[in-house]
Figure 1 (tube, rainbow over the protein chains, first blue to last red):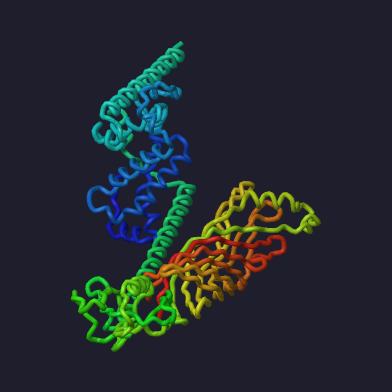
Figure 2 (figure 1 turned 120 degrees about the vertical axis):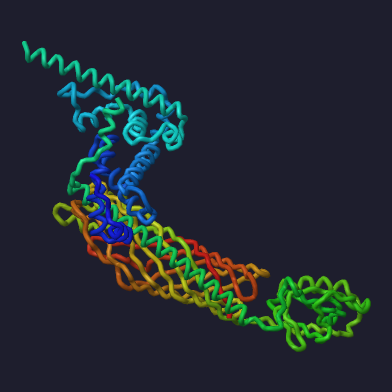
Length: 190
Length: 369
């Protein structure tokens, strides 16, 4: 997924050429949906965030100057997710240090060694929303705690704390998955 | 742990599903519409700005050369005394729209001057125009003149004689106005509807009253005004909209009906002035021609929408109270609460019958010729 759009294509999309816009959408879609799936389980929510982000891409494509286009698109969807988080008034949860204890269930994994992308995504969706947001930004998008703190308007300690809690929960999920795999292998041996 | 999840950053190629494509197209269309609207608003305001600039330019170019700038070259008129018009010794001056004072040209001085004698008083006025032997001043300055008249008690050997006041009784003005109106829509459902199998007038009335709400519109006016004494006549070209917001939950349809018209109004009223501020109640009718007349309503069977057309031509009634402020002799700022109502039904489509009224606030300028 390293294909970058041509400058003419970007120019045409920015100027309102619908064919160029749809071609650009097809190019950006894998990146956008990949990010959206880590934050939202519901397909309708994923569609809203992906398409809102893409409209922003078109709106601001004239301001894109250099660097990897798809990285820029990733930044836009990350910002859109943060905005959406704010819009839904869940922002205060970032300050609630008991938010992570909320149990969103477990996921039944088939193997203890290799996890598929879907399984990892499902694990992330088991996290509380603030923990998922911070962990995604830190561990997957590669933002530093300082940057996350600035983006979300929290302290670095809060960001670190949510990451720690997310790791703890993910570890539990992985261990649970291992245990289930073990029991399955014992059962089949008997 | 983090490394395990880092792999999620890598996106795999996949094509967007049809539902995503349809949704993004709808969003891009909405975005494009919004951009066009923003562009139109900018365009309208640019035209408004250009008209204002043009008006100022016209005003400056038509201003008499002799007229003096009120700040830099305030005209000082040496006044010896006033010719009193009444015989009983009291002043006959009254506030009129415009006075013409006859003066000796050499008495017009642009710099500080020493009063020649006790019989003279110095008066600073803003000259509208200075002619060979007369000076026109703003009505507001006449109050000061009256005061001076009382202070100076010298027999009337006039150097400056107060001419017979000659207020200008007629004038022509062109104006521009912008504003917003709240549109109120009312509909009627004929009881004959009950005779159609499967239709219920009561249900249809209820669904429409829940599903239709008032909306707002932009107004734009180009106007001509003729004033004769207290009377005013106004006409021009107005852009206005009628319509309503729709949200029919029973069929999951929402939107806005907007019927766009241009109309030629004919308004008559009177003008009451107090120095620079005036109030003009006016009423009249307007002939409107439709620019966009198609709308959507819920079907009387409540299972979809039906398309209707508003009348292509219609008469409207108008009433307004115009508040004005004379910025100077040429430009008048106006603020106008306005009420409009369709005369008769704007939509008359068997079972869908709508009337409209609106209350708005317009603001703009008049440029007097």
